[in-house]
Every structure is written in structure tokens, then in C-alpha cells.
Length: 271
Image (cartoon, rainbow, N blue to C red; front, side, top):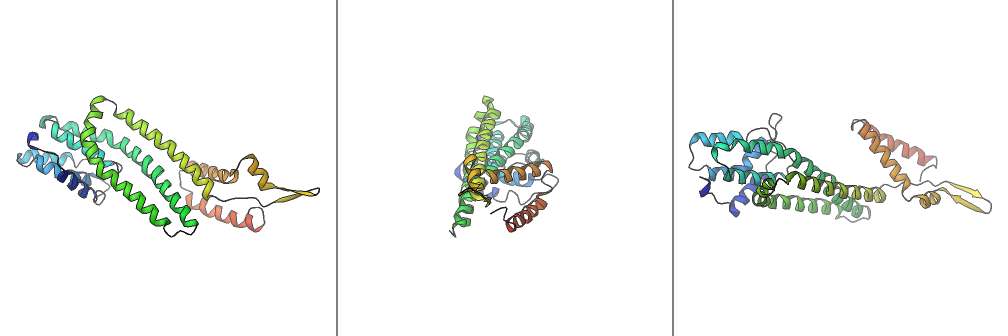
């Protein structure tokens, strides 16, 4: 059966197109299981074309088990699953479910770190900076760049997963590779967050005190000690409150900051 299968560009293309509807069948019982099976259908229908009905049923049920991972990096895992389907004897294919279950969690964490906590903030911060300066292409830039990279990773993910996935698994370095990429993404995300705070969070103290013939400008003193100190302080306070309340007071925190900013600005304490 597997000797007759050939992974062609047409199969990759069909998997990519099917994956565009990956989240459409999401449900609370098995979450992305329907999308998982539909994405793998181009491989399974060729692989089991002449197989007995019982084997085809087992293959379908095998990929209708609970599944949940990051949608953008899921093609990496699907490429690996396709390679396993082709190269694993029928009697041992229950192991595919174990491998899929074991990898979907790390891939989900890696995807969140790379895309939602790194790529999206980078694209959004650049687009927001463009929009603040009056450039109407700010929002367009954010969505176009993010989706070009997002879809590009999916397109090449199937190929990389199929050709390189087995090498990583066989070498036993899969966890190490994921940890390194995740660590690099975390560092990059922190750098972007720092730049975002310093460029978009605006907070200053307009207070001035007379000193003989001169005057002391409070904001200038703060900037000499640590530039952007007040924006960082407010950001750390928001992070502390969100972490302490597990995000449950996000709306209250937003309105609280708005009210405090209006009041302190009215009385001339903040600028």
C-alpha cells in the first residue's frame, strides 16, 4: 500500500487548501479533530484507495480523536503524520495517535509564542506607529504582512513536516529543537514589548519648581535617571494586576486607567 503512494505537489496543495477550513469544524468535544481529518484526507484517500473497508474506517477514526494545537504550525505536525502514515506498518499505526497527542501541546505553545506573542505584536506595533503618524497604510500593513507570513508558514509547513519530521523524531532531538525555538521567540517577544512600551505609551509629569533664578523640571530629572520610566512603571503595574487577577479585571483596569489619566491630567499632575 505505502509503496504506491507518492507525495506530490498536488497532494501538498490539496492539504493546504483543506487546511484553510481547519477551524470550521471546531467543537467542544474533540475540538479540531474534524479539521485534522479533513486536512489529512488527500493523503489518506490515496494511501487507502485499494485498502479493505475496515482499514479505511480505522484510519478515519484514528484522526477523529481529540486534537488541539496552533493552527499555523499544525501543518508541520500534519506533514509528520503523513510521513508516519506512509512509512508505518498497518499493525503499528496506533502509535501515530500517541505521537500526535504528544506533539500537539508543545507545538501549540511554540505557535502561541512565535505568532501571537511575537509576530503579531511586531506587525501591530509597526502598523500602529505608521497609523499614529497619519499613514493610512498602517492597518493594511499589519494584516497583509502578518497573513503573508502566516499562510507562508502553513504552505511550507507541510513539506518541512513530511521531509524533516521523521529525521527530528528519529534523532531524539525534537524536544530540544522546540525548546530552542521557543526560547528565542520569548527573547524576541520581550524586546518587541519593550520597544512597544517606549514608543506607544506616553506619560509625562509637567510639574516645575522654582529654584533661585532657575527652575526644576520634574520630567527632565526623571528622564536623566531613566528615560521612559513612567510608561514602564504603568506597564508593570498593569501586568502585575492582570497576572494577579488572571486577566479577570482587564476591563476594570482599562477604565480605571482612563479615569485616572483624565483626573490627573485635569489637575495638572500628568501631561
